[in-house]
Image (tube, rainbow, N blue to C red; front, side, top):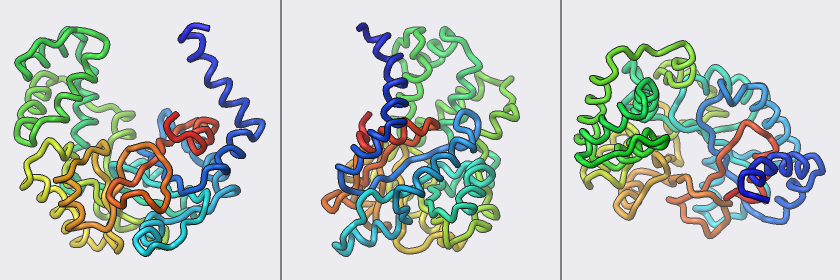
Length: 319
């Protein structure tokens, strides 16, 4: 069987394994807490698919607030096996309009990680804006723009958009902002559609404050969503310290204070700063939380709109 045929077969295999209850039984052979990572709800990841997963999870797993899981780890207390923690990155408004009503309906706790420096500015997380603007250009135009920004040739391949964004993520704040401005200048006709607004608009301070604090914990996703290892020590400290201060000012953060690294990226300098201001931090490393997992590199499992994929990843997080 060639790779293309195998790739087409995998979804069928997962559906079959889910329908037979195999993945659910197999997951229970691996002890530990699973932290699910979400971003937007709506669009491809429909609210009805999200509710189907909530109902399925609720009947099979204990659902913990992230803060409770962190406190148990800090205090050396046992973690309930097969428990689930729900997290949502970026502070997207569709988390309020699509996910939050369902979390309320089912009384399921979750943590929303937000970027205070972007809230109420009318802007999006910069990676979202850059992707949508670049998608209005063809491969040759993106390659030319990338070459001008980086000073190195960028082939006009199907992957050029992702490669350019990956390069931008690794730039210091000042340099990255210069390139963001170049992309804006190169896309003067870009006008967000209703779909864009649905996918990328952020919650306001007032909307965040309206959330039920008994269910929803607000955590920091830094001030402006930079890739932290690309920054200077001073910039890292500003991103983490100021973000927590802004959340405290708006009476949104509570102990244990929680952080989520953008793109999961961190190094020793980032971890040292995080320890000064937060009780724990989660990454995008795939895995299961056990008593030996570092508090400042908590693994997560990417959520998916297909319930059979979520079930599979609860068993095999890296799949």
